[in-house]
Length: 439
Image (cartoon, rainbow, N blue to C red):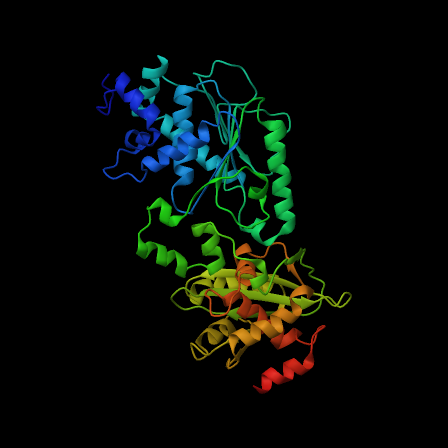
């Protein structure tokens, strides 16, 4: 059969696709160089052919797990199992819906339509085509669930049942830094495995670990492929990944290894809701200009009733000059009284830019050893800080993963600097404040 794109489908072609699903990339993308390899076929077949138990795959980030297993795997499975109800579950619903949208677009391609016609005897059409849900004409069973369904990890699924459930990146940075998030994710995973998957059917779990007690800890042992096993990134690319993240996070996401918590200074951050009626709000900027450094923005105030500090943090990539509008917006939103800024690197230029926008800025020359500052001021007050729930997870991750002489460390540096400048005496030791200011 010769379709509009000069692809001839024969029984041999179908057998090839059935045995090697990664070849679907050649049909759908028609690129001279494709990213999927025979390894991805193994992953697809391992997860989708979960005949007698739930199956788990852990592989390093940026190895095309989602592309292979969820996107191409879903199309491949429906080609040979047209009546199945599939749920694609990500941490966030919008991420799962984006995959469903990509599958919709692929199913509209003439070369894909011809492929399904060759197998099913008719062109596929949509009985349902909306965000997060597709139902195709080749599905002959009548069910509330569609052929492909997008769900978030906390989407209500009570009463739904699926023949295949694939959870991808169902744990993330939130689970690493929050015990409450870890417990919630575990509860949902148990519900999926017990009540949402159809009887005698099984789930597939794909992703990377984030914490030794996250939801992976309640699942069967996973196939594990670190960044070197996959052989997709070269040595230079791997080094670039290592430079742009903390060592614990690189170990977790690329080597699939956990760093013991007892070697870290900060753990179990507390979260709450920012109180706009608390005491005076002060801020701090750790400005970045180039390289792998990040621009860190911190706000804190003291709750006079409890003696606790409330904190809020954001982190940005790139030159601080690109974030002046965002800094000004947060300065006003938090009703900040004064913002502190180290001016060693640019001799006060950023300070002048902020002042020109009407912000009350105090620049200072930093001479204290960074590690001593973080260990003294931030460590002393860590258990007294309640972080706004809208604080960037990446901001907290830099703090919880902090290790001496490890980059990036801009967020713990910013938080420690702000504590030193305005909050060192709150349940703290003034003698330390005096000691380090003298040094």
